[in-house]
Length: 134
Image (cartoon, rainbow, N blue to C red; front, side, top):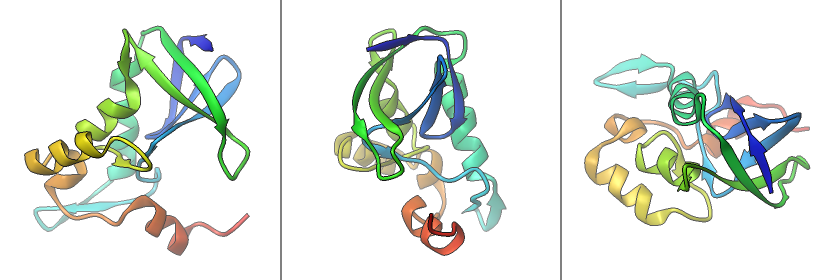
């Protein structure tokens, strides 16, 4: 368990203490990814990070570490005030479910929340086209 003040790196990654942690079970747009809403391009990657900032700002964050991703980053389920951060990001529509949170994603879709208010490329597909392989 790690806890303390955290900082949003992007929409699905935080820095807690000196550890960069990937939120398990979600995938958010990359910082330079854009999406469409009402035919207009907008910086959905930045908006996803802003949504995460709003959730964790000046809050005590608690993370339960749970393995590592393919880039060797620690994976964790993290919470603020007992509420799962990943679930909130998906429910608010700023991240898609990635191995969990299917109910939250269905709710976001029904409400046309966040990314679901327009059209977007799934972050994993966007990365395949825009981010060079390591």
